[in-house]
Structure formats: structure tokens, C-alpha cells
Amino acid sequence: RKEVEQDPGPFNVPEGATVAFNCTYSNSASQSFFWYRQDCRKEPKLLMSVYSSGNEDGRFTAQLNRASQYISLLIRDSKLSDSATYLCVVKGGGSYIPTFGRGTSLIVHP
Amino acid sequence: EAQVTQNPRYLITVTGKKLTVTCSQNMNHEYMSWYRQDPGLGLRQIYYSMNVEVTDKGDVPEGYKVSRKEKRNFPLILESPSPNQTSLYFCASSPGAHSNEQFFGPGTRLTVL
View 1 (cartoon, each protein chain N blue to C red):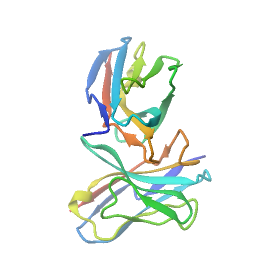
View 2: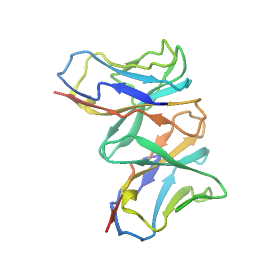
View 3: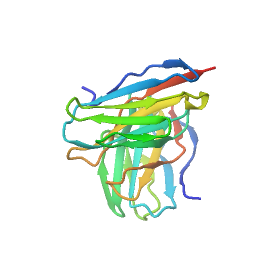
View 4: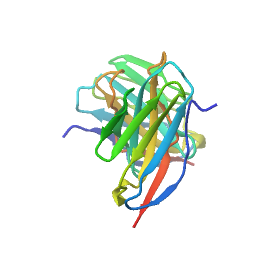
């Protein structure tokens, strides 16, 4: 069983739409949670950390639900430049090794 | 400019021919790691290093070696490459193992024939 699960998509949305991605994790002892963005054939880059109380960065909102063991990423007012793959990352629970989800592909069209 | 560099960026080789992919960071980071990324499997960690002369296996270490003789360099060695090691490889670094953000290199696309 994959430890971190994401819907691979692709999510195909028009500019201006609101889109949400979920990610579930299996290790209840996990302590740190992140969303990374990866453009086609490029390296992943940190988009935002996910805090227990939820956090927002401009058009992006991340939330954590420990009871149900999932994290979410909400993108409001989608831009063409938001087209990318979004990777869910989970750390902790007795290991230094971060576990990456397989990624969710987002395509924003005009 | 703070960065992680990898060389080569692209490599086509043949089964059994030893190769090394170099990784270097100029941010004085203690923690470095190697990942491979394959379609449908996502990023998987191969090896990591907490500091100089300290390395440990990640999730998929078979067929790979690493060394950490200096803080800035963390080469990935394939002693006898096989076709199942065809993949996109990323080196990453962070200030420490518990740091939130990892900084990734640009990637090395390896094809083993």
C-alpha cells in the first residue's frame, strides 16, 4: 500500500476556476506535511508547508486533517501559470525519509 | 546564487559501464539526498546523508552507492548500471534532516541500454 496517495488527475480547469487536491497518508505518526510544485521536466520546488491550523499564501490554501489523515490544497482564481504537477510530501513518524505522493497534474486552460 | 548542481544533465550509457552523477551545493547544507523519479511511482529516495561521512539507505538503494567526503558534494555511483535504472534522478539538499524545505538540483536523465 502506497503511504501517500494522490489522485493523479489531470485536473483540467479554466482560468479563474477554484480547484482542490487531496492527499491521504497512512502513517498516523507523521509530523510534517508539505506541498511541492513540479513543472514539466523540472525539479520540484516547495510551494508551502501545511500547518495544523491551516495556512494561506495568496491564492493557495493548505489544510491538514489529522483525524482523517489527509491534507488538501485549494487554488483559487487559477492562472495559466498554475499548470504543473503538485506533489504531496509527508515526513516524520520515526523516519527522516520524506515520502512523496505520485503527484496531481493540473492543467489550466484559457 | 544559492543552488544545487548536477552533472551530467543527460546521459545514455550501456549496461555494466560504471558511471557517476555528481551533485554539489553551495549553501553549506548538512543534509543531502538522492531521488529517482519514475512515471507512476513518483519520487523515491535512494540514499541520504546527514553530514560528512554519514550516509544511509533510503527506500530504493539497491544498485547504487554514494559517498560524502566533503560537505558540498554527494556523488551517486552506479557500479554496474542496468536498464531498470533508467530514470530521472534528482539530488536535493537542506540545512538539516528536520528542515522543512529541500532544494533540488535540475535533474539528470539517465538511459541505460
